[in-house]
Length: 592
Figure 1 (tube, one colour):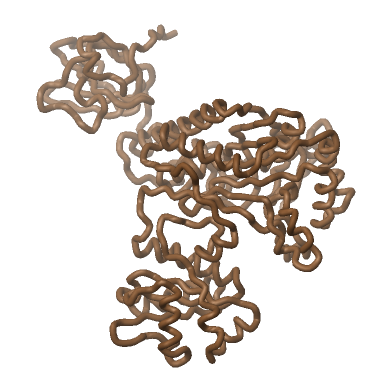
Figure 2: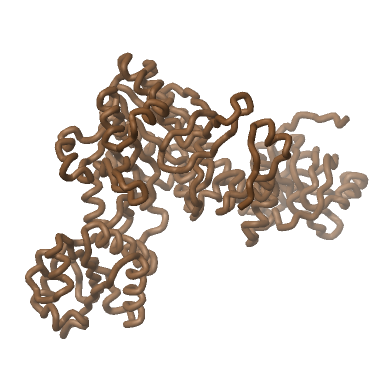
């Protein structure tokens, strides 16, 4: 058995204050160099790297032992800290002005040659990184990301504990409830033919905490959703879950604003958070930015030009407006002068890919307009369109005619894509906004009935309920999202807390009483014993850390991510199980 001596210092924490001190460090061999018979090694641990010198003049035995060291060997080093010789300091290392002169080296474990470099930030395929994740996580750049994530979560806890929140746990094995995505199901051995479900969120349980009188709850929780994956989705993810009693949304906003400001001060020094994060309604966000998660880092707002074109003879515009549709305009700065005709046509093709039947455009120079719409609309109408769109002479104006939402959505997507192409989105800028008053219901073509946009426990704007018979899809919800740089990082709502209103909501959603009773009966029963008004929110920890670090995928900040097919390449999950295991839970496999 090896006799471990407690280390005196971490590698990355050595400094000039330690000169003359005898130290014991542990770590991995990062690099080895032989300079004229004197060996130099970079030794790495979770804190960073220090340089170790093996000088035969100090100890021939230690120098000889060091000559056998290879990258990723696990070692224990003893020696004295000294200042590096003049001109040999390394500004790229935090320990770059000192080094350890070793008088003892012990190999705790040897290592095979890794399939990719640990010491260099070289390009490695995602497949290899996920398969050998334990090696990928050794790389300093990856360790920085994972440790940054840890700091963010620690800061969240500190802030919420200082604001009277209690960290409470909710079950992982629960029952299946409709929350917008497929459940991951777990068969029960003790109750054959029955299943647990992994929670898509702790929604029902955190509301039960409010009924139980805990007032302010939070949890850094794991959630599970069996849905198609992309860059910002994983089948299991982490969220900061919060619920508050006797609290209006305005107060919740203030608390979350304070949390974001605290993170900016303590963890993300480059981020600036205003004292009051701006608030806009869903309708306003769609009208101005064509998205319910608007990116406010750059301007390029959509403008409505319906009134300008409704009296023209242009048939497409006239028919769309007559049918209750809208004509939206987007001014693209400088693109009128810089885009070729092919580039403009490519934008039109992209609009068709997004569902548009067509896309109008116009540009002009000092002399005249250059657009297929000139004969159809005339110069006077185009002048008014340019004025309404806020376009300058070198700008390209895009025109979209359709029903309100499709018109806004297509131009909103083009706004983001063209903003990136033209370099209009500044790097390192963080722009936050609250979006409120989302629709309460939406129509499901699959179910042929209205379904909840958020979840069936969201309270509607009570003054809107009178619209239910005639225009149910116009009812607004007391729901809200927090958006950062065009990405939704959190969503929540005021909850229904009266049992009669909750049962009425199930009626609106055409959920049969028996089904509602079976799935939510415990919640409705709980409400009958005095439920307080309450609201809550969940913030996506993975998305938040990804944006803070400027990464493009949440897989970069999750220690053990799945691929886009939901596979863990390191462990091979999901995998097959034995027939005996299947029999124990009363299941058979079927291959179609």
